[in-house]
View (cartoon, rainbow, N blue to C red):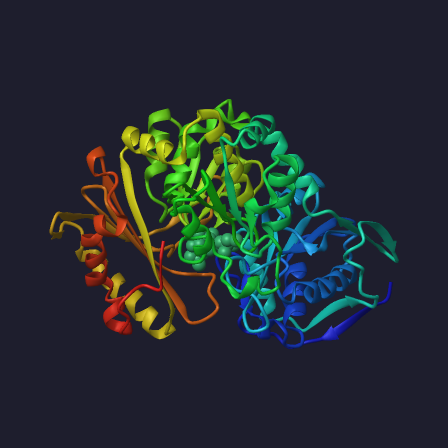
Amino acid sequence: MQVETIATQPFSDQNPGTSGLRKKVKVFQQSGYLENFVQAIFDSLEDFSGKALVLGGDGRYFNRTAIQSIIKIAAGNGFAELIIGQGGLLSTPAASHIIRKYGAFGGLVLSASHNPGGPDEDFGIKYNVSNGGPAPEKYTDAFFKRSQVIDSYKIAVMEDVDLDRIGTRQLDGIAITIIDPVTDYAELMQALFDFPLLKQSISSGYITLLFDAMHAITGPYAKRIFVDLLGASPDSIINAVPLEDFGGHHPDPNLAHAHELAEIMFSDSAPTFGAASDGDGDRNMITGRQIFVTPSDSLAIMAANAQLIPAYVKGLAGVARSMPTSQAVDRVAAKYNIPCFETPTGWKFFGNLLDAGKITLCGEESFGTGSNHVREKDGVWAVLFWLNLIAKKRQPVVEIVHEHWQTFGRDIYSRHDYEAVDSAIAKEVVEHLRSQLPALPGQTFGEYEVNFADEFSYTDPVDGSVSSNQGIRIGFVNGSRMVFRLSGTGTVGATLRIYLERFEPDAAKHSQDAQVALADLISLAEQLCEVKKRTGRTEPDVIT
Ligand code: VG1
Ligand code: CO
């Protein structure tokens, strides 16, 4: 194999965020930009010669072009085999599974997840390590450091690879294996859930399903699993065909962006169960007839009922949630006497806990739930979990949720996002908040007395690594909380996220609208952070 060494100049902005490097497509299209970052990753890894690398993406614009470049750079750097999803497609959880199943050294997943796609929109790339999970911070820090001094990359001189033909081709010095992106994943799902029961519940009409693939990666997964294996009708999947620009929408499963699904679920003709996933298939939104299940509640309900699911019948070793996720799952852990961990935002922080067997189930308020079956959050898995739960309990979603609240109380929850805020103003908002923290404990605002006010810092219980500045949190004596943090996945300006929660033990008040129930906290958050005042905005861009 002929390998060329191409001289290059570093780019200063290749610092991975919450989940990989995300930039506008136009940024990635600059000569050497993608190549530098991929080479910086390979330069930072230990010896991988003779090992396999998994490669795939969510199919967004620039996916195929990027994959062809990465194949050549990986070949030039000495990987022995590349395992690639047909058409360059792999959902994030499927990539995680394939890394684990085939014992690959790692994988590159090409996605900007829930961010929009197309020539003027976003692209992204993230590296996953051999446990199948997102590279921990010590890796991503090393990638960034290397990218700042890189002066060349290695690239094999070879033809483009036919990404559509399944099978292994032995090229000069490297094997290229194209696999079906769904098969291995579908097998794993069949090993976790009660497929005969699901099939029966669907064919009998007890469960009617509507899944919104948002023109993103889960279309083919949903078709194989829900339609081919479980017998749902083909029209139970909407926006099923992956498109390079996701049909012009944000492939972000929440009530704002999955509005087509939301409208149907709140109409008279709603099916019994509705769900959606995101660009790369790791998020999930769960709804029932006339009810939306917040991701924090979904995690808690899954934890409380896990033993009804074949894969978790022996119970859970422990659970974990990201810091801004509501404390609903903590209550379940306390009742079942299992450990509950609080981690910073981002799935990479769950990896060690899962590997060490300290937790079985984990989740984030941002529509992410997962378990020890892979090392990523998993959208289709979450949908199957809920379907299995409904089939087993023979209860509609609304009943399952209300019963849960009756048992544990309700953690009324909402997140307010201010997007594309001028970066300098966002920094001022955070500084302003930070400066108030020392004086807040003991102060009272209406019925809210501040218990603690700090910046979240996390010490990983497995490897002792410390991650600081993971969000500002203000906790109140009555258990309510508000959290402020800047997004690490956006590509334009800064996004301020405000997370609000209040515990409501009184079942008579469980049906309240979250925005109404949280009104006092919402105005207190503004009083403290002044985001509206400083930006001139009147409302958040997205409320979830
Ligand atoms: C967001 C979410 C976080 C999630 C991350 C990646 O990060 O808040 O919980 O892990 O996206 O999800 P941030 O830094 O923008 O708040 V995905 O599905 O976009 O890979
Ligand atoms: Co995603």
